[in-house]
Length: 434
Image (cartoon, rainbow, N blue to C red; front, side, top):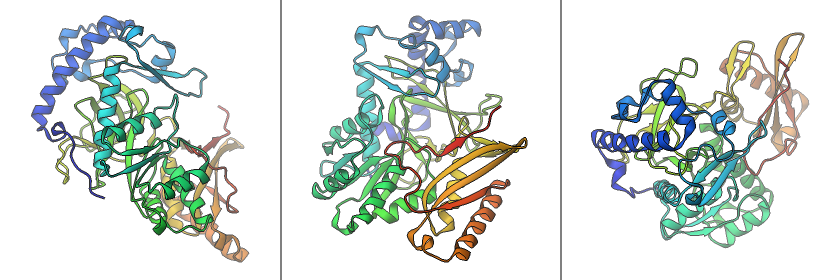
């Protein structure tokens, strides 16, 4: 699947881009200082004034923003524009009760649409394409972002939202859908249902997919591409910053291009919060520099990745972020060892004989952490001899120990045992009490 460059801003030199970022950063810092009491207080605590920020080189002087800041100022305390200028409100659910609210001015929606259009151009979507949007519509930003981006390119949009999978498959086939937008776990679910229906992918016109909203491994990419016979590309975003389209993979599959004229990325050490150089792994931090409704300064995403500033073979010069390795707040610490679900997923898919559907159960027994991985067997293995199933279990446990450095018990379960998700997959069940 060959993409194309939509905007000359994607090919600016690093110097030209830095000059543009510096100009926009200064305006944004002044905007939040004058209009958002939280930021004014944070800057005054650091004895900073807007005029102290002269370029992107001064970014490190600014305070961080966290999701807790957004929740503490629920619902509209982080808005930098008057309420009458806010034309849309999105929100993401949280585990602590309060929603994380994001307000958009018309300018912000225009920026988001432009970023999504660039992203979809990287996937080769154009006026001849038919795009099925199977992200949820509503307070979640995924569906509407993909919808408006595809329409900006002149593509036909099939707004199925999530759920009703059999109808989704029927529409995909009958409408000649060329590109699918959904979570990677839902893409695999769709692929499994297509197989159960006895359909052949040769009957479909599907050739590409933009998958995001949850971390997924290269092994899972391979499974999706094989089962759906498509090119699967990673799209990255988060509601607090804009929504999907903050970064997107091109056909080179060598990292996701960040829309740096709108979002300045940093990598920081999650413990010390000190900035890290290109190539080192740490927590991804973003500063928005064109948003007017709810700009965010040095927002800690909790996503673990690294950045690459080398020009891409596709011709774009924007910084690329590598696949998200995991989240600092989703990371499991098992007997002192850091464990990410993506590591477990990679092992499971490589093992063979199982489906890419799993659940991680963590508990504490006799003051010791224990981890059990429930994994679905394929129909063939499920019908096999008990001794062969036991061999597969031992093989996976050995592979997990080699990858993680801690032991995990594997429990192989029958096909279709683990609940499916039509949105973000819930992989972890941590029963420990602290």
